Image (cartoon, rainbow, N blue to C red; front, side, top):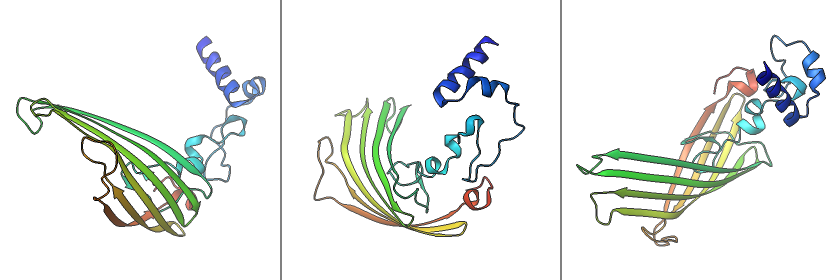
Length: 204
């Protein structure tokens, strides 16, 4: 009981809620809709995971709006930007080479911004290191791979269609800096169905 009261006071302090008013208010059977695609908690605050200004700006591994490697055809709210940091670690025995231990670390730093509902820009810098005990040299790394993305979005009711244009500048292997004579480009068509914003149904 004491721990529960302490948690209520801590949440109240962090959110600026009147503790006495919150304690005396009856517990709602359901959260009322606030008209922004989310729901209001006590104190009238919108939980962040339901706030479309936050959820719609989740950056993927390369900075565009999406979920890790899955890109959304939509852009975030106009005028918003995001900074993303992702990391991954892998370890396996007998991977590629028998009687070896392989370890890999991957990380990315991304910056993305939405100019308007039709245009999104993003930058990403990637770092990867792989070590295999059976190889000589045992460690290989790539530091500073640079990605530049332009996403064009065309929202139509509950649908959105988009085109993602990506330029990729890899770094020299086992060296810092870009390998300027090596360049990659790709174009990807995107389509998204979103029933949350327009219909209030939790389906994307």
